[in-house]
Image (cartoon, rainbow, N blue to C red; front, side):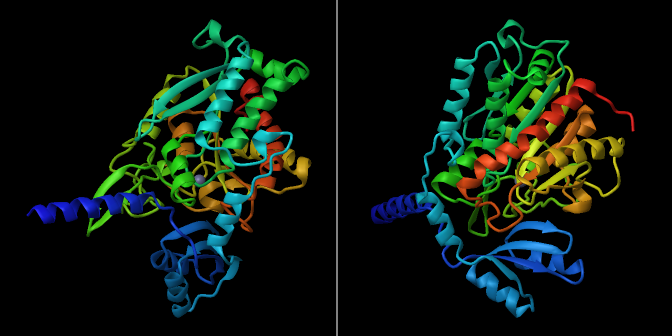
Length: 415
Ligand SMILES: [Zn+2]
């Protein structure tokens, strides 16, 4: 009896220690498969746990050695995008290139991002305020930066429409927080020299939420670089512990439809109910509290796309031509900085159907112009975008996000 108890404690301790060990991706590869028939996409999805990206008849998949065998046996061949995923992750963990513009030359930890946000608010109190808008499953704060002239003189200015830009619903998409953070830094540094920027911050409230999923982000640093969902413990099924809800399938507009999963082990698990997760619940309550939300961008990676509603259906939304006009203007701005092409189109049409996503809720429920970006690259590194591409990505997206502010100033829904 006593011995059994002791064995249990030792095994439990080993399990806990085992959990803290980083997940190894040795032997894993990322393949790009182009199929002849759309039905084959569903077959691949049934054979593989982690689908990185689906675009038309092209699928990028992350494969364990067993999954590579399984796909070969089923007759699929792929172009190898990443031949040694474990080595690439290790290489990026040891790569450290401090340069002058230090914040955007390497990927920051959660604490470093939060410190940078706090410093910006302390340094520019007449333009920036730091707010807590909610808390995560593991009780970490979710911070927003509020950028507007004299933010501390009013909780909200009724005459200044709000624009929200958020990042990192998906934990492994590391390029998205720096893009949001850079936007804040650049707006603040240009306020006194650029009349356009001054006009925006005098007449709009710009909110930036660089990390919607702080638990997931910490987990990608400590344990599993390729974690996507939040860190909700869902229960034990057939002896396996299931964790995580896909936050971008948990929003309460058209929740539960195609492109989301009811299986807790799936990377697109939608949760037990709309807004079952504190991250989406707090963010949605906060968005509902903004009196005049006009425009919104949700930052993701990868594929270089500007995605417009809807995500839950391929049918065109109201005002599609307005979305398209803004999207094409953003595309031109991005192209003009470093020559990178970001394709524009409805999410369901050019990517895949995904119900319960944030963009659909912000447009469908709040009536704000809402757009999803898939940032760099087009698949060479995917989620493992090298640090020397952080700053160029931030630089090219900056003028595209200014287009969003320009639209919010004019709010022209005419088609
Ligand atoms: Zn994403």
